[in-house]
Amino acid sequence: MVARNKTEQIRQHIIETTDDLLYHKGFNLMSFSDIAAAADVPRGNIYYYFKTKDEVLTAVIEYRIEQMRAMLETWNEEIKTPLERLKRYTNIPVIELEDVTRYGCPMGSLNTELGKSQRTLQAVSRKQYDTFLTWLKKQFKELVPDGNTKHLAMHLLMLTQGLAVLAQSYQDKSLVRREINYIETWLDSLV
Amino acid sequence: MVARNKTEQIRQHIIETTDDLLYHKGFNLMSFSDIAAAADVPRGNIYYYFKTKDEVLTAVIEYRIEQMRAMLETWNEEIKTPLERLKRYTNIPVIELEDVTRYGCPMGSLNTELGKSQRTLQAVSRKQYDTFLTWLKKQFKELVPDGNTKHLAMHLLMLTQGLAVLAQSYQDKSLVRREINYIETWLDSLV
DNA sequence: GTCTATATGAAGATAGAC
DNA sequence: GTCTATCTTCATATAGAC
Image (cartoon, rainbow over all chains, first blue to last red; front, side, top):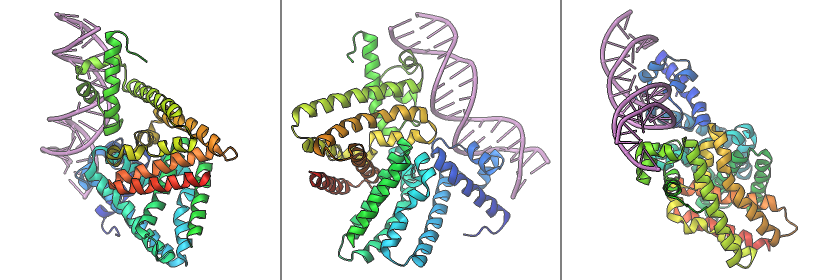
């Protein structure tokens, strides 16, 4: 989605700065004041672009999913084998090591927060998982045609989520590297 | 810790009702009004027992850890082999299936929430993990004396955390059962 | 010790001047 | 379209009557 006029540009700018803010503070501790300050837009103006905080969240999730799809599309083109593609996915926490050990997984931490008592919003957030899962299933289907691709995709996602939770809790980078190695070994064993 | 006088009894009662509340709503969405209502204590009275919300949290975590220690002590006495003890731990999510699929892991979800921008409180919450990890290390030490018990304990904890995150996100009970089976197979393979 | 009333601040959201 | 001033609500926290 390309921002056309000025309103669209500012709206897009708010979405992009709020993306980080949401990751760093979580949804419930992220206020409109925070959003306005981060985007450098006057406090009351945010309401011209978004009616409610829920609407901001939805827009940010949509933006994230667009980014993810573009990334996965690039991987599809540039990485030739499903095994290497799965390893590329697996290595996200290593590449994002600083952020993962500090703030956890952007998808997982948000889902966990919203799942308690904001399930409508959690359903929105969960679409991030869905996007990855669909792609992961395709890769597993290519890698092990006879396997249960749904379970395999879920399993891999689960491993990365558990690792992100503990990596953040203990600020432990070596745990990330170690567990990612295990996952790669497991992927190799499937071929 | 046994509640002696009436003040101690009420304080203890507040802690126990807040334990569930914290699990179901999370820390930042749990208000003093919620706490007072759940414990059936007049709103302002809570401040007679706890000066701040942080203090309530600390008391609840201490209570949880007491409970955990008692539970682990019972397991030590009643379950004879380290393998069976580790499987007993592993099966917590199956036994707590309704809660885990609805609210996630009480330790993990709290750690994730507090880890964003309340790291002092997160350090308090993390002691829950520490308590389990210490016990898990002991069991692995007995099971595989030559293994890296610290890594094994972390790995097992990580698996249960990942499973809780996804189980809650998708409200998926079969995922819990399936993944617990994998973990048990893995434990068996270590012997 | 117990409870009510209230102070204080920050949140989400809105009205309306420019 | 842009921004300020403000409304309302609800949060944590306190003062002080009983």
